[in-house]
Image (cartoon, rainbow, N blue to C red):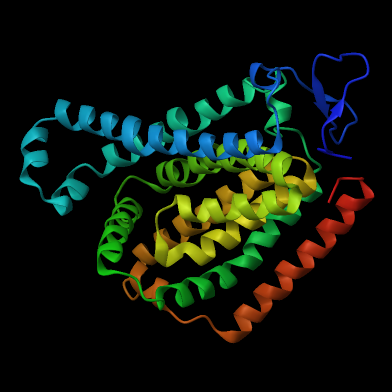
Length: 330
């Protein structure tokens, strides 16, 4: 039984433990666990604080500094910055933008997450659920996100029709232009897969499912922890017109982490989801009759949506049944 409520360790009265799927107690012996004011509220606050600190480090501090440093050291960089033309900046420094973003995720999301986990226990990898998992669960998890693709696309179309202030749409358009410029650049599929699929898959999952979800589960229980992790994941991306599909994806990733007792299925599913977007963009780039915008706006056929729901539902049923037999907690 994995991640049961806190229980006192019989041989170590000075700290508490969490149960794990393999029966080896996870010792909560870090500095934050030795205080006398530990409570569900503290766990909840630490989950939110971890997300907030990581977001500021990534978006406000590390990534902008790295980008300015790269542009400033390049020839003509300062003149481009002072021109105030976002389009010219995107076109000229696409590589620098994506490198800054990726390094910012490593230093602003992944590293602080592991440091925060160390304040709870010296068993950091177990705390963030970086545990091995049976290949069948990984296969089912990836198959599930393939089935989820038409559902996500359908939700994105519904989401885009919701009324949003023009200022928010303009802000989001800047983000989409950056992503599109990277996908349509000549940086190569391998580069794009690493920067847009592998790095976010590892760094974001460590933060949201590895640390924040753990804290929310300790505070509010598994169900609320899964929902909170998914909803905040959707909000974190600052893309209101994509909020519904991102929330659904986040909830699925949170469920996988809790149900299998491992972070790896969520990491690999996150990579697969982003990787599909990179591959589709590459295909569209090579086909004169297609472009990214037309693919994004194409209506989802009812039969594709029905097939997606069937595949996704079937995967959830099989995965849940297999996990129960292995005595993972619900």
